[in-house]
Amino acid sequence: MTTNTMQPVASEAQPESSKRVDPWTLTGPILVATDGTEASDAALRAAETIARDHGLSTQAISVLEPLASMYAPVDGLMVGMPSTISDMTRAELRMTSVRERLRRTVRTSDSWKVQVKIGQVSASIVAAATEIDASLIVLGLGKHRPVDRLLGDEVAAQVVRRSSTPVLAVPYDATVPLRRTVVGIDFSRAAVRAARAAVTLTTPPGHIWLAHVKAPLDIPTEAYEGASVIYTQGVLGAFKKIEERLEAIDLLEVRPVVLEGKVADELLAFATSHRADLLVTGAHGRTLVERLLIGSVTTKLLRAAQCAVLVIPPYREDREPRV
Image 1: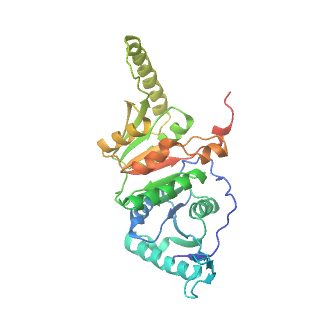
Image 2: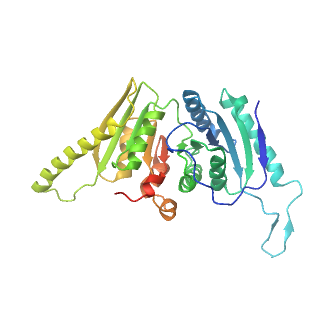
Image 3: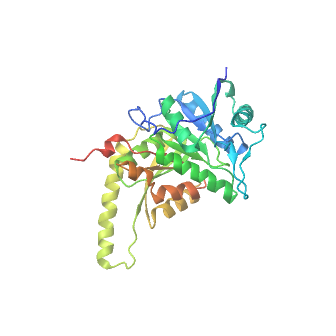
């Protein structure tokens, strides 16, 4: 039986951090943000597939920005909005459209809890995820029109900035299951969690590429060539340590790869050339300011990737000083 709730006002309070021990572990509900249109269908299907594979429940949330009850025309007069237009009316219409999209898109629509909120979009999504202790937030990136993709990317980036829950951003034309995954690896704690998340979400038979991007040298020298060999050997050793920490799954092949250039550009190009279904990155940030200033690499992946993008948030151990 589907449970539906409509809440006219979303709390603007700063959401609390997730109580989950490890943010990348899928042990709680999956929350899907949808606008009730076909642009979110791929996100709904992805969430249903992941939930089925891991025995999780699914919930949907749709958020509407509030209407102003009064507005000021150019002549300065204050005019009331028509009585037929209200946040409650809009919420009821949105609830109907979300339930209809669920019915058309997923097989398990009757089991989905649905809520519609009025408020700031990204804050409301994160607050809802915190409230239910979600293990994953899934949202759509829109269609291929520049304006649709730009709006979808912006919401996704805002949710990533605010959230202590992993965020999976799914393009309009994405397909499931996710079998080909590229993970950005810089050998940090965040990268290890990203690799573990990739193993969790990649469906066998599948492939995972652990992709490390090293910075190029403008003028290669003989000394640089020697240093490059040493660097590559060190990277391969670091790859081996990461692979030892990953769960071995039958029919899931993990391969290391070393790229050279700008990180976002190389990851995007590699993902495209290898027809990746998923790009995974671990977000860094030990302070609130660092988390709000989401890195340029993550932002570019969200805006330019032709596949789904999973962002694993900083974990509390990242904020503790290393000894």
